[in-house]
Image (tube, rainbow, N blue to C red):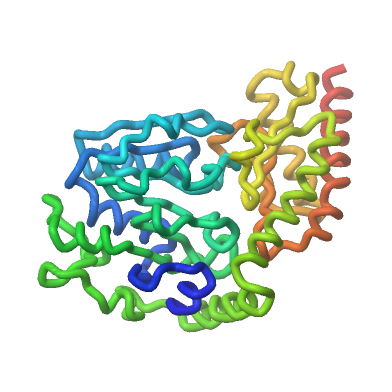
Length: 340
């Protein structure tokens, strides 16, 4: 699994790739607890998972030299304001906001700090510039649709150097320990997991990796996700009630596609009524067996969130689009009649 992931994603030979417990969350927590504190930290947050990392750094690790660069749902923080003399923590793709960084050009090649990137809904669907990233994490779950049980952790040589030259001042839980005797614990990156994964889940993920290679590798995976997004994009361009939550086309996620409702009737409703309408649309689609769990994330503005990763078929998304119009029109008519 480690070697197939390395090969398909084009991870450099001198980067370490390991399997760790607790999905992407476990992998990213391991990295933060093991690496942060040696320098000041810039924390980028524009959706719920990024905000979660901010909470852990500020309230759990209690680091003091922290700068928080925030943006509301639908936007990115000012990437030009990031200080790469500091460690930088960010998500590549905002799973709950549908907003991604456009590329890696904003990341300094001659950085002094480390870049820690949560790439859980980006890996296998977006091109990651490995030379700009020192820590990358993802789960088996997102783009390849497997079990979320374990996570993947990638460390650059610079991250390994930090591990071997810096000891955090806080107690380190057993499942977070990446070093042994002052050196990186290489067994983690040779397939010795800290907790035993289900071998059924491992075989399932190996099957997904085989499929990825058979269809043409990373380029084909990205193309499938891009084609899926294009179906939604074409529908949105003709819609009179839906728009992308991300206004800037360059920052729109091609996997976790988030939509907002821009119908003047909807915008005139009170906030709680807007939330009720959006939930009713998602519930109606669920009840018809058309789409499941496509409501916006609980902290995001009311709307819809559609998964368009590489395991989804574009034809299925094409079939979904008319249902979205039907569900919204149905809910609007029912609410309007009730109000009258």
